[in-house]
Image (cartoon, rainbow, N blue to C red; front, side, top):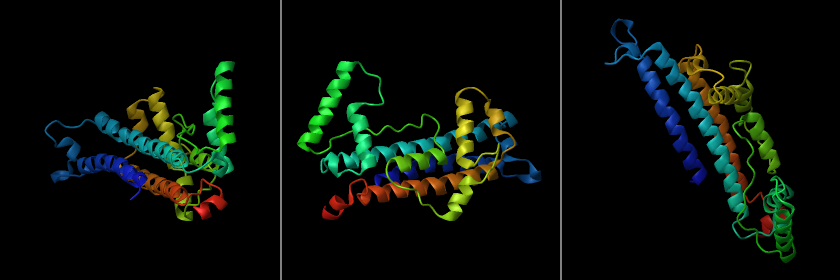
Amino acid sequence: MSDLRIFFNERLEEVDAHLLFLSAMEQSGQGGVPQFQRVPTPVTPMQQKILYSTVYLQLYNLIEATMSRSIDEVATAAGAGSWAAADLIPQLRKEWVRSMAKTHVDQAPDKRLIAAVEMASALVSSVPVGEFKIDRGGGGNWDDTLIEKISARLGFELRLSAPIMTRVKQKVRNDLGPLGLVKSLRNQLAHGSISFVECAGETDTTALMSIRDTTEAYMRGVMETFVGYIDGLNFVVEARRTNS
């Protein structure tokens, strides 16, 4: 099993453990008294909403962690010592140049020159590509739109099933799809724009489970696409891929 799959499943287990707890607490006891009110120290409505809001934070953690790990795995595979820069597809070669020459970082002229010379030396000598970092971007803004953009930047198109794409684009709240809503609420919480109670709104475990299910289906599809991209050596040009 790919390490990406193991990593994804471990993060998803954390979300499910929390949702299982919320579902159990929601169950009605005798006389229709919610479990939230039957525990030794009753959970107040405010505490209940705070617990609900935490699910959005966990789901965003799953999304960003999956993307960060997937992108890092691409860089690791490309820099494993088997490929020269010329072997990489143009999109990955561009990411390697960006990392080597640090074109996305403000630098003093002398440092920029050193980086350019190192990159030129690697190109001239055709030495294998070493360890490098792909600029992930994101910065708290991961949703399905950004995921599709970064995938195209790395040289492949996400082709998930029509039902999954329909679900992830369907508006669920605040005129946003599931991943867009998770990103929006997470950022509003992080910046103090809303409280945890406001974040929860009128949601319940059923609604949260629906968002969780769509997020899992989409992100699992994304993760599997990255696994296939790496295992299929699709980050190198076809001639080198078939001869390896």
